[in-house]
Structure formats: structure tokens, C-alpha cells
Length: 380
Ligand SMILES: [Zn+2]
Image (cartoon, rainbow, N blue to C red; front, side, top):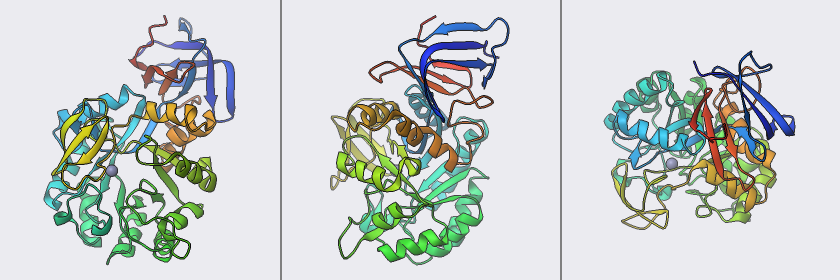
């Protein structure tokens, strides 16, 4: 068991507010109220202490993908962990159903071992009109029987399925997911406003990377974005990398949804935390230049190279969002959505000691997961 620690002097971001000159006790793997005898005191004055980040939507990193072997999955997980993501849902891309069910089996084992927090299936039940970096030949209508197959292959670890609910079988599939406690996420969709409202009423609760891979807002065709933003039951994912969204679009989402309904995601692919060059996203080839990933064929943006520590820094320093709201979007909101808020998502006694230490300029200095340093700030 990790030795107990008391972190002192930091600005600690708590659900109730920011505590200057705060103190956080870590007893073993958990956050505690009081320090056990013999606990090590670590002075972290001048730093921010925030909860570990929770990524709902992530395809890989460190040169490896969640479509690969168990070693690949762990490489990607550890890459993002070093950037502050202590809870991560592994996302698949559109593949043949046989490939997906096999991958679901592998990922479910890693979820059972506590390495990932479950599986997000992005595709194959998405719209060819808004396919983004998904292989068109492998897209399918959302047949509830096939959705059920994925849920079963994931052995209780399916957390989310992104689908285009306007396609035949879409609404029934949303209902099926909701009945099984799996998040139905609207994305890669060509739905109208009305179709999106119907999907939300059927149980959809997440917008997959709002704005990206869906029709824009029109004054006579308000589209899915308007429906997803206005409904209190929906949490909207945003990719805050400065590439996927104009800063004003991000502000618009925050303004309309409010800070409690936004989740920052990476939608990262293999090149996150790695170098520019050629990569694969599922079966498709991707070229990464200056950190921007695009399909070799057609040039669509193909995921991001974002890590959540960069999303944090950008949200505070460029977007000028309040630190408390950014913490909600990176930790508390996605934790709640996943039903993991009894364990992670905020710095409260009894929860896992998952935390990120940032300097005054919001650069990452330390990461702790379940009481052990992943990135040791070396402050003694
Ligand atoms: Zn994705």
C-alpha cells in the first residue's frame, strides 16, 4: 500500500469552492479527513490541486490504439495517465462487427482489471453523411439486435454507444441502450432538430463531440446542436484543442448548456503524446502534421492529438473559463455520467486519491492515481 501523504499549501479545487492554502490528506489509495500518524508532508505551495481527469472519448495515444493488443491499450492508457487522465473510457471506431466484438472482449478484461473505465463504441451505427474518419463501407443501420451483440460482447463494460438515431432502428436502439444502462450518445448524425428531440425523449443523454460531424445550426433548421444544447438531460462533449472548435463555439456551448452539462474529451488517436507522422485510425490511414490528424484520403479531421492537461490549460488561459467550471467539465461531470462519482471526479474524503498538480501557469507538474504518483512532482 502507498504510504500516506499530506499535501499542503495548494489552491485546492473542491466541489464547494477553491480553498487557498488548502490541505489534502491521502491515506493509502483514498482521500481522507485526517492524517494517519507518520504521514509524509509534501509542501505544494504555489500549485493548483485538482481532481484527476475523466475522459469519456479516447481512441489511443503514445503511438498505440484501443483497437490493438492488450500492450497497445496499456501504452495508450499510461500515456494519457501521465497527462492527468486517471479515468479513461476506451473508444473503438467503425469496424466489422466481428472485429468489434473481439476487441470488446479484450477491452472488457482490461476494464475488469481497473485499467480502463469501460468501452465506448463509436460506430458502426452512424450516418454516411457525417462519417468523419469512419470507414463508409463498414457503416450499418443501428439494428437493436446488433447493438445487443456489442453490449453482450463487452460483458458489462459497455459504457456508451455513439449512433445516428435518425437511421432505421435508431430510436429502438437508443431505448435498448437506456434499458441496459449504457449511455446512448448522439453523434456522426444528420438528424433534424425534431429527430434529435425524439432520440433524447427515448433516452439519449450525450452529444458526441458537439458541433463536429453533425449539421450546423440554421435559422429554419436548428438541427441536432440546438436540441442537444437546450435539453437539461443531455451532456455535451467538446474537443477543446483549438482545432475542432472555434473558441466562440465553445463559449456558446458553455453559455447554453451551463458548466454542469459540458464534458471535455480528447477524442485522441494514436499520435496523442507522440510524434507527427503516419498512423492508422481503425482501418483508415491518417497523416498527423503539426499535431493535427487528418485522413490521408479526403482530408477529414481524424480525431485529435489532445491530452486533457492541454485541454485544461487552454480552457483557463485561452478561453478564460473559471477554474471551477473547467474542473467540472474535466472531472465531476463525466464521472457522474459514468456513474462513478462515488469513487472519482472530485477531491472528497472517501474517494480515490486521483489528483493532478498544476503550477501557477496551469502546466502539469504531478499526477497521482489511487494514492501513488504517476508523475512525481519531486517536491519532497
Ligand atoms: Zn471519436
